[in-house]
Image (cartoon, rainbow, N blue to C red; front, side):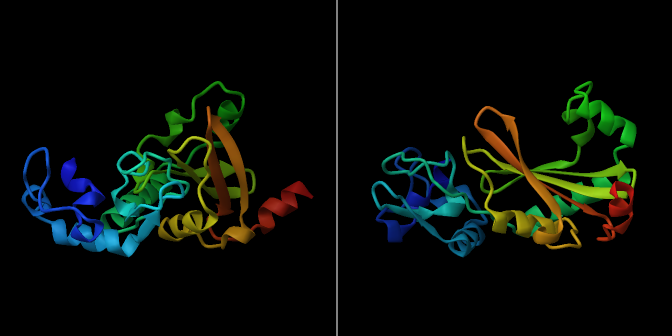
Length: 209
């Protein structure tokens, strides 16, 4: 784990190697240069308490590595491996849409959400949890995205939600979807976004009129 620490980088005032194992980051990770490039792309975060700068990509405990203050914002990192994972859960959601009867049982708390989300979830750096399902509703199939973060009391930034929406195949922009926040545990809130698979709300509006 020492090789993941942003304090290894010489620009942050660290000598070569880890003071625990005496190995360099390159010794620990053959793809170190690629990881470093991803870290630079994600950018630096400046601690609000002590002003220490560290790469957002290398959050391991989501606190400042110098003074341990909680990081107020999580950086969303979407690389090719994450894109592959998001495409995989999108394919799983399309292959196994949730029946209306199951949705009603979820509403009545006869089932747990995990019973329909198996294989349709992904943890995305740094600290995002994504769930994607397709659901049968009276007006047709809806795409349902849920995004939360691991920091207590925090919610995902709308821009992060938009980026994930794009990767999992959303047709409409966030402003044209139905979206809401949902308390899904102590100090945990998810952002939910729903749209018709084809982007056409007309059949759903006709049913509600």
